[in-house]
Length: 523
Image 1 (cartoon, rainbow, N blue to C red):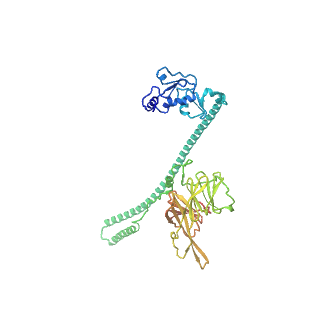
Image 2: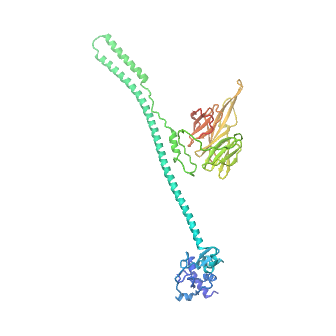
Image 3: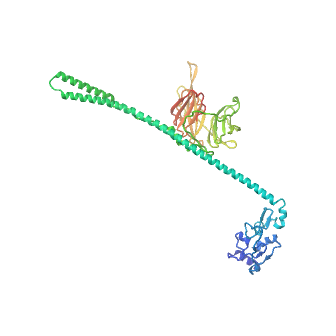
């Protein structure tokens, strides 16, 4: 059977009433329990549970029971000397917990360190605690730390100043670039306006020439009508002459109308260049700051001069065959070595990083910040580029012979894959086929080629095939690229030519330059 004291305690613990003397440790924990003891040294009320922990640490403290508390004789003493506890401002810091290396008050010990075995009274442990610690050394250490923090702060402030200056300089350069672009656009506008005006003047001048001829004929008609009206008398010979002249004028007018009456003068045909607008649509900024993602900026411009920015030696030329390369966002360079059947990675200082074996690397391109694709004989390999180059998955490319046309008299070989590019979230792969026919009288083979571009989604699913107009003896495709919006394809072929095709494989234009000896890359 529970005692009266226990019942009273249970009632107090379960009560929601406001106690005159609440237990301080329990109040700090959010509990509503009445204090049944008061410690004169700690100046704190304790419940029955908390006083047990208190007494383990402070056996010499003076305690008052519940009747002494309610008598009104107990009063808080003004704390003097020492530092107040941060958690319990009404209490002085008098305790030290060795396990947590923490100085605190008695309430902290009762609440937070009740299970710690190394808690003790500070005056008792002062000499031991201060062993190896001195006031001057602590102050010196703090002052040194203060100087270091001030130095770091000064460095940060200088960085803010520097980056602010960089910002201002770049804003000025952006403004200058804008002015140059606007000035150039105004020049293009003036040239375009002059072209239209000159074309307009040429057409109008032709029309005015014909109008002048018509006016001359109208004057001739009016003159002959006047002569007919003015004719008097019966002179038949003179009348014959007048009518003959009138008939001659009429015949001349009829002949003119037959030949020139429906004359076509043409229109002011002005074919707008798609390059400028396409370039503006394809860029979102005059440049890009580091870490902006897979940013691409292309503006049609004439390059007057170029200078090398770096050079590095891969290895002896006889021991490798570098067939393609790409540059990552961080400046690293990936080379495709066909002879050694591998990819080689260099950092931006041209130091060798690592390599990855690929059975037959023909072409490669970057598809994101940290991913590239490599084309070999019959597959596309996806490579993640991080601390090392790791193959993630592959997609097999099945090139059906039915994608290529049948040419009478020629036999067709097995289709071959040659190049891969990434554009507008699509992969484009070049496949070509060789046709040959043996010419008996000349004792030789006559070859032809056909080129197909295969379009794939980035997940490797097939989209369509594009049969191009590239034919005759092109021998092979040296280089291949796509425009940003995939509307145009660019091929570098033999005979120093670069051929532009539309998205359906139709040839738009050809460009030839004697300095293009062996083009191996088109961008």
